[in-house]
Length: 445
Image 1 (cartoon, rainbow, N blue to C red):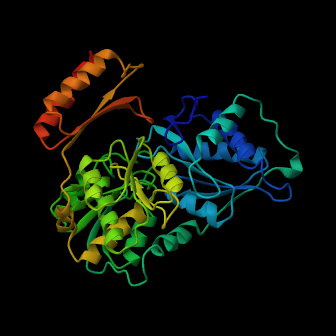
Image 2: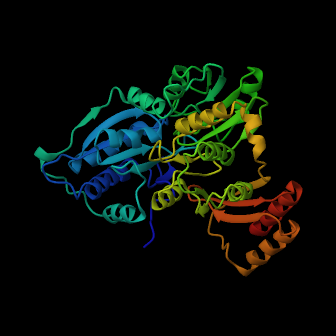
Image 3: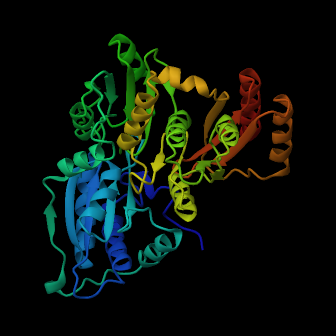
């Protein structure tokens, strides 16, 4: 069976259009409540922790979810706007059975969606998502009135999460010599991130931290880093840190205004773990991970595995292998000895810990690895495109010849947006660009 609603990262779409409607979210809350609490002893009242990012539609969808969970007999704990990884943490620490985040991550405010976590703070498996979907077309059979769920607010959710983030670094960890610009994307990190980095001693300048429900990710955050690059240069900062709308991914900018992507950040963490003999097993990347990253792991005799694109697949492989580190070049980084899921704030802290340990600014630290130029072009689509046709097979062969058969080519459909993503990479940037543009023309035709 294939999933009808769930994509690579929960359910996502345009607010007001099926399935991102109040009616659907009531049913979704009910179905998730039934499926995720079915193994509980009847004496224990199940509970769910619900968080959201700063989109205006979050209020509407939060109320609908609350109603659905309550009708399934699940108590609801509300946090208000808070990063996605905070919900994974709170679900575990409060002993809840379910964690829910209402968010469309890096998408604009018109979109919204939902992500689920299990009681272990992990993304749901495909089989569990299919179970939930199987109930969505059935009528809601509300349980007896005396067993309905109640709703309450967790007033200290931010304080709890701030303490958790700070406890992922050693007590001696101190950022007092660093001037850092934070870009919160007008999203879920706008309250938490400035507190964490300030309390750890950094001189913090915070930008894009005034959400109004409509400006999340708008020319801001990890998807639009231009503003952060300018801010770092104009404020003579040591570095900049940008999060996406729900705070589970991070990118950085060095003191010269150069962008540092997820592959580079993950490499610094891997190198630090390796040098300090903390690394267990190997590293998990995705089909998008830079080829130079893989080659560098080979030089250090560190096993490296690629998965499909999506942090859920990276997470699954890490836990199957019992490894510690993995991630995507988009800035989703998983550090399983620190947290059960990808966390932008915690990942940033581990990068800073790495550069403090080697006593070099981040731009100097990155000289130990030179990533290959990677060209990524997103092509909007309105219908299905056959990417496995003989025409496309020949186009890929021709594109590889343009790159002299050096590097990699990847063409795939996005799991979260109506896009075809074309990626080429190799030692010669001009040839990679030429190959990518050639493939785009072929797909359009």
